[in-house]
Image 1 (cartoon, rainbow, N blue to C red):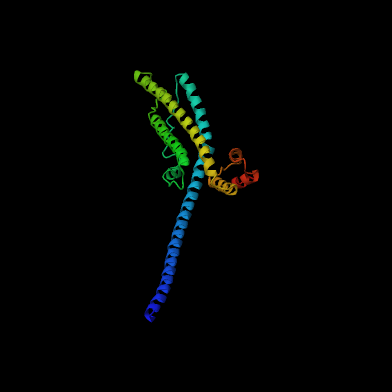
Image 2 (cartoon, rainbow, N blue to C red; image 1 turned 60 degrees about the horizontal axis):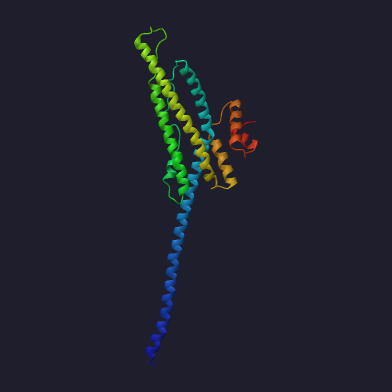
Amino acid sequence: MSRLEQSFKIFSKQGVKFLLLELVVVFLGVYLAFLFQSYSEDQKLETEKEKIMIGLKDDLEYFRVFFPGLSGSMKSTISEWEELIENDTYRNFSGWRFIQPQYDYTVVEYALNADAEVIDFDMNSDLSKLYTELEKLRQAEELITQIALNYKDVPSNLERTSEVQLVHASNLLNLKRLKARATDRVAIMDRIAELSALNLERVNDEFSDKERKEIELLLISKREIPDTQQEKQYYFRALKNYFPHFTDEEIKEVLKIE
């Protein structure tokens, strides 16, 4: 074998080694870049999911805790209206007006449009049911407002002419309509409270017990704290009912109760 052939053979062996090494380096570089991009995307999704879950917990806890009270207050008013209607009379109901939007559920809307990696199908389905009820509530309150605006005040010293009697009849009819829409509002609020509790079971599973407790205490502290000691005591009992895993001292610290 000539010297030229020997040199070419040696060079070819070295060249293959260098080529393989270069291929390995390029492969590792591409693979590591892919891993880094995948890690970055996963971290971004985790951060997004955490923000959405905390936001959902804030909204859902509000609906779960406060809607039963709002519903109960409306039920009491409906009972008073029913008694008036039975006696073919009414009182001024023009104050029942709701400026929309009454409630903040932007996080629920946002979550419904989130990626499947953030909000899975089952949670999306449950949130959709909740969102439907929230939209029904908005419509019910808009109808209540429209009916209340139709109230016509009639001075008591006016003679009972046919026109005045017609106004009285119109007010009585609108009170009946108002009672019907208020009954709808009560039923919807009760369903929203139930659906919120159902969705909270899924949301709470995203946090450890310690994280969940810290988030709940933070959310409670963000709410408007009652001024009087009597109101604080009422709020204290309500929180004990809905958050039985809190100690008395933890709740009192948040409410600034001595």
